[in-house]
Structures are given as C-alpha cells and as structure tokens.
Length: 269
Image 1 (cartoon, rainbow, N blue to C red):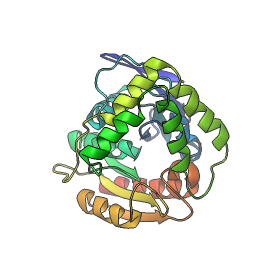
Image 2: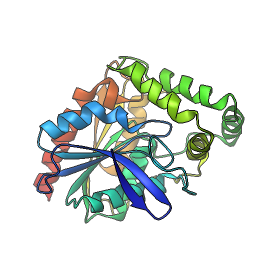
Image 3: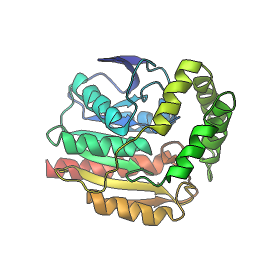
Image 4: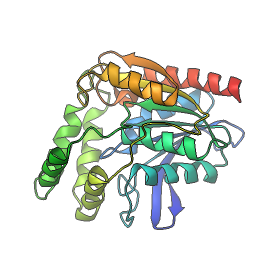
C-alpha cells in the first residue's frame, strides 16, 4: 500500500507491476462504499500484460484519510489526476467503476493532455435518484443501522457470478464501515451532490463502456450503457452473469476490454 498526499489528507493506493516509469500507466477508481481490492484481479492481470496499474481508494474509503471535506465525483477526478501525475504517467488509461466512472470521465475532459483512454464499468454519469429517494437514503444511512444497510446492499449488487475471495472482500468493506469517522466519509460520498456528465465537451480520450447484464442499479443495464457510450463516444460491452462489479465478478472480460482500449488509444496518440 502507498499513499498520495493531497491538500486535506492522503489517498491510499496499491501499485501492481514493477515501478518502471517506461511502462504505460493505468489508474483505477472504484465506486462508493467499495474497497480498492475489488480491482485485485484486474490489477494483477494488467501488470502481467506489461502495464503499471495504480488502484486508489476514494476519500475516506479503505485506507485513505477521513479528513477530507469534499466527496464528489469531481473530487475523485482530481485525486485520479494527481495520482497519474505523481507516478509520471503519460497517455494514461483510467478505469472507473460506478461513481469512479464519472470521475475518470471528468478527469479525461479536464486533462486531455494526460488521459488517452477511459474504461467505464457500470458507470453513473447521470442522477437517477429522486429527491424523495435521497431523503430515504439519509434515513437509511443513520447509525447504528447504516453500516449494515450498506454492507448488505454491497453484497446484493454482486448478483450473478460470485468473485473469488468475495467473503474476504465483504470483510474489508464491513471493517471499513465500522469506524464512525470513516462511515461519516462514506455516507458523505453516497449523499454528495456529484455532478452529472450529460455531455463530454473536450473529451479526446478513447472510451469503452462495460456493463454487467444483471446490474440491479438500472432497469435496463444495456440501454444505460448505450446512453453512456453516446455521451463519451465509446464502444459497449455487456458481460453475462455479472452485476455491478465486473472488475471482480468477470475480471477477464474487463482485462480484455482494457487491453483493446489501450491498443486504440495507442493508435490514436
């Protein structure tokens, strides 16, 4: 585990592959109430394919500090950019799941000179939560029941194939949700007024959208993926026997999609 120093605290990240700056860099960003270890299989496989892979925690998640005051998708985008710069990346690929998908899209729009490709895994680019439902979330996230609610929901989002080591990953998430200061950060992320990405002006990065066919977050996951692809000008891949976490449920499909993206980005550089 490593730490990236930011103005209000540190972001935790794992680095897969040799620390050879001549290797192409991939930065991975998980979603809310997830731990960076959800990218463990993808990180190892992409490193074996010749890449450096940095997988970060969101603010207040995993082993990141809990002192941050902003927990939006744009805040995560600034952390991903800072991590890519810290590691000396050029023509960086970024991979984002859920909220992380919006974060890497924002990063690519803000820094077209730095980000050459984005892979969006079951991304949230638009707000599908009504004000009434958001109020319900506030009530559900109150302690003492809030941590249990999120842990249960995290498990249910894994509809389809159960990842290897899923019990250990659930333990990481449960342990992450227990401390009061960390849970406050995670709840702030869930309730944060993250911005919608309804258009992508300035986006020059190659893009691909990967969605689990059984993702319970949308009534029609394939239709949502097509809409996202229309925003970012990307391709779509639907993954069978998979819910909201293709990076852990179907990592081989994600690795293949990212490697194809890398080839397209390299050709367009």
